[in-house]
Amino acid sequence: MTELAQRLSQVRGEIASECQRLGRQEPTLIVVTKNHPVQLASDLLDLGETDFGENRVQEALSKSQELELARPANPVNWHIIGQLQTNKVRQALQFATSIHSLDRRPLLEELHKRTLDRAMPLEVFIQVNLTDDDARGGIRINDLLPFANLVNETASLNLRGLMAVASLDRAPERDFEVVAGLSELLRKEIPSADQLSIGMSGDFLAALAYGATHLRIGTAITGNRVY
Image (cartoon, rainbow, N blue to C red):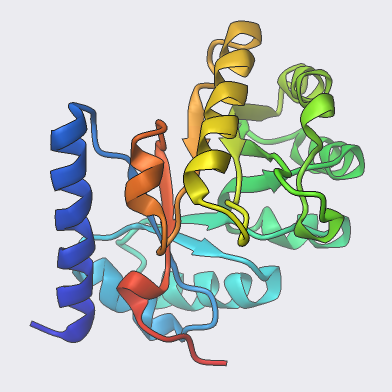
């Protein structure tokens, strides 16, 4: 068994055990492949993984095209998990299955403009900023419900729920409790927006207790990134 297969098996085993303890279904595992060569994604496909997370559009587009040429019979779900610039939307839509970082009105407007002729709505998550740092991205908590209603009124987008990144300076459980409460408020307004993209390599087990439906796990599975 390769080191990659061992790490993946370890993480999947921990997720399964914790979900069994909590009496809940297992979430979607998104393996974060950013800053790794396309061969990693190909190796993950061999191990049965099909959901990959990327931050940078140009890197992800190149990878997706290369992988599609090499593995045309293996469909992949590419998730954009980093901040998306409006001038990168056109490229992102060439490969992205899901965008987890919808966080501002100009981006919403650009996505709407670029998705009008899609056969199926684009899956999106609203990123919530749980810190005082605007550079981390995300919509402010007080603006969440008005913004969510705008997204929900956009027929070419399918609002799945919320995404958040736990703060670096406090226990992740505090942030997960906040975003779980926001998710409950959102579901009262928009019942179909019931998904939660929370939890990364250092805190994914904690995220499961707060209703994570999508885990974005990188180094715990992929090892150190290549910069």
